Image (cartoon, rainbow, N blue to C red; front, side, top):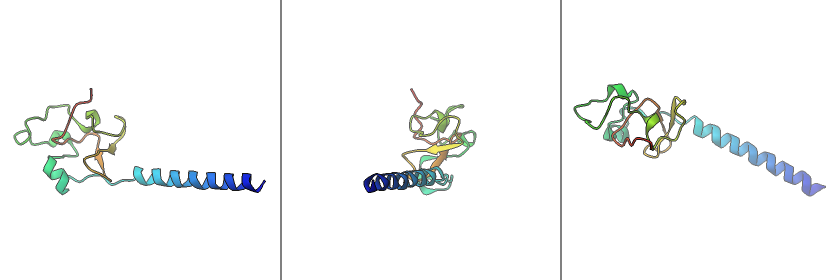
Length: 102
C-alpha cells in the first residue's frame, strides 16, 4: 500500500515538473531584430521589411512560418528556431537562412 501511494506521489510530482518546464519554453522571449545573431542573419520580425538589396534571396511571401527550420505551427504567432536557441522567432519574420518547407 505504501509503495502504491509513493508511486502516485512521484508520478504527480513528475507531471508537475513537465508542465512547469513546458510553460517556461512557451514563454521564451522573441528574438529582437538588433540581436547580434539576428543582425548577422538579416532577421526581421516582419518579413515585409527585409532589405531586398542586401538579401536578394528574399521573395515576397517567404516567412518563418513556411521555413523548414521553424518549430512552431503556422497558426502560432511565434515559434522556436534552432538558429536562435532559447528564443522564438515571429512566424511572419524572415532571415537569410530561410529554407522553404518541402
